[in-house]
Image: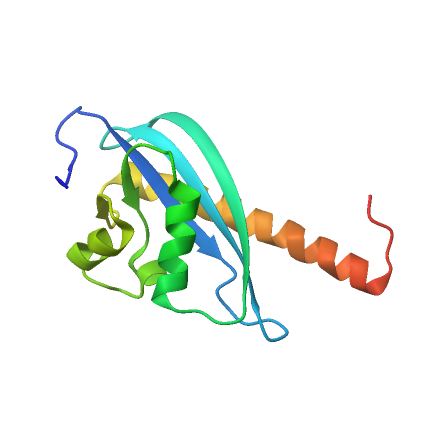
Length: 144
């Protein structure tokens, strides 16, 4: 697994990952993982190939569950996985690569951070939609 870093005007493919909902609500964790598969250069998102949202409900959290969640969400997408260090419990990069079974890095460039910010907004919006719908269902409100 060769780590790819951006140099000059070179572009690479990445898979930016963000997970929303990593806090307990009513005894479980209702999470949404957003994935943005893109080609980036050091300062720009050149092209977004695809965007995914994957939902997961879990009774507890640990690194194995989070790793499996990320692996499932990224299956079939080319590129280096990029995530904030907190999403993988601040583990060393070599360990994250080993657990995920593919190239991984923490964000370094402007474009890597932009891709992660996009994934963050997508995961947060997806989770809010799920929670709003759940709340309306529980209160008997009409869902439009």
